[in-house]
Length: 80
Image 1 (cartoon, rainbow, N blue to C red):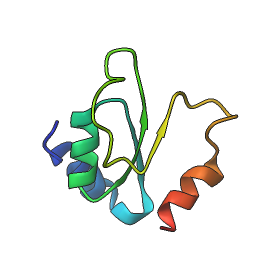
Image 2 (image 1 turned 30 degrees about the horizontal axis):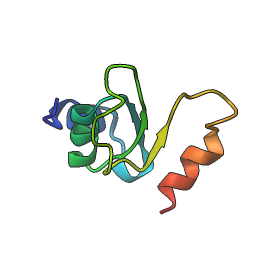
Image 3 (image 1 turned 90 degrees about the vertical axis):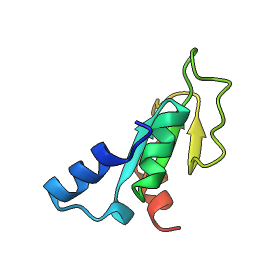
C-alpha cells in the first residue's frame, strides 16, 4: 500500500468482480490502494488515522458495530 497490487492480486486469484466487493480500511494509504484497484472502500477511523483525508471513501464509520453498519448498508454501496 498505497499500491493497489495486493487488492488486484486478491481479485484475480479469487476471480472476483471489483464492483461486487467492499474493502474495509482505516488509513488513507489503504483507501488509496482499494480505490485504485477499483473497489468500494469504507473507512473506520482509528486513533492514529482520525485526521487523515478520507474524501475518496464510499463511507466513513467510527466503528463497525451492528448499530452503524449492516450487510444492507454495505450492499447499498455496491448499487451506486
